[in-house]
Amino acid sequence: MALRVEQDIFLIRQRGREVAAAVGLEHQDQVRIATALSEVARDLLHAVGGADVTFRTELDATDGRFVLWVDLAPARPLPGDRYEPASGAVARLVDTLSAVQVGGDTVVRMSRRVPANAQALTPDRLTELRAALGTSAPGSALDELAEQNAQLIAALDEVRSQRDELAVLNAELEETNRGVMALYGQLSEELEETNRGVVALYAELDEKSAQLRAASESKSRFLANVSHELRAPVTAIIGLGRLLTDSASDPLTPEQSQQVELIRSAAADLLTLVNDLLDLAKAESGRIEPDWADVDLRVVFGQLRGTLRALSARPEVTLVVEEPPTPAIVRSDEVLLAQVLRNLLHNGLKFTERGEVRMQARRVGDRWRLTVADTGVGIPPELHERIFEEFYQVPGTSRVGGTGLGLPYARRLVTLLGGNLQLASEPGRGSTFTVDLPVDRT
Ligand code: ADP
Image (cartoon, rainbow, N blue to C red):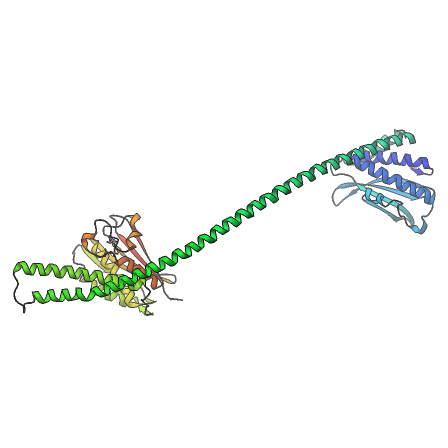
């Protein structure tokens, strides 16, 4: 198209819009390109007296979208071969707007990308569009003015509705903000309240555990003192009883010697209890300090095998102390460890009517696992922890004797030796006590 007189500006504007519509640009973009085109056309008409306008489409290979190019070749060279639009806003209406060199001439070129969803611009389609544009008669300047006014009104409408929408959105945002702030305030208040509660709770807990510690300490002190004080008189009773029944003493009537025997056996039970209490009190008050050494489990097992064989009075029960695999060295206290195992073996023999009591040592990684398993009465699962409480005896088992202090003491000792003592048992299927000890203390 040729731009020569003012009138042509309207024509070019109109054509620009038609071409933009034909290649698939959206309505707003049509108005944008038409407006940009008429502005540049006016600039060039005034500056150099006119221009030749060419519309061109090209496929952008990078994203498969078409680009509408509009070249305006000035009728005379532009001063300084430069183009600066009179209104700076024009450049914002299109994707690109600049003066470029084409075959030694300066051309003003603008472009706008066609949306991806527009109909593909095949050569056939372009021929069709060109034919359609060729037949459409150009309207008058008045028509174009009317069209432009309609677009302006539409654009103003659009702007107003957008402004209204924005106002509504702003109001909503403000409302939401107020809500969020209120919620935040409420939450931080609740958090503070909870924190205060937790702090108070901790203070109370600290106080309670201090009281508990004090109570436990005085209990241990009491037990230690009482049992210590009892030991001497009880030992004296046993000694005196033995003296009374001694053949060197005056003979007693059968009735008397039976009574003295009863006194002696009661005193012996009492001494066991006193000794157990003393042990436990010592362990609880932390007065037992292990004598750490490299302990050979084979030696410990050998000694226990010897001393306990005498205890297994029932012929229906076999005591099996297996030989530990070598090297059987553990960092521990030999006396304390032997005490624990003796206790467990003793219990096993006490609560097993027939079958066997078996002690084993197994190395599992960097730990020793020592087990004492019996085929005895077993212990109901709900009592597995209770039997580690002081004085607790499974109902019905107390007739075999004992104080109920052996297991709590054993567990204390094992803990002191850096290990733990566990139980697996079922009524009627025997019990297995496991002492798990680290090979080394580090
Ligand atoms: P004691 O044996 O002196 O009563 P313990 O603390 O050693 O005290 O054991 C507590 C209770 O646990 C025992 O009275 C008994 O009821 C139960 N118990 C311990 N060892 C076994 C075992 N090997 N089989 C069955 N019951 C057991």
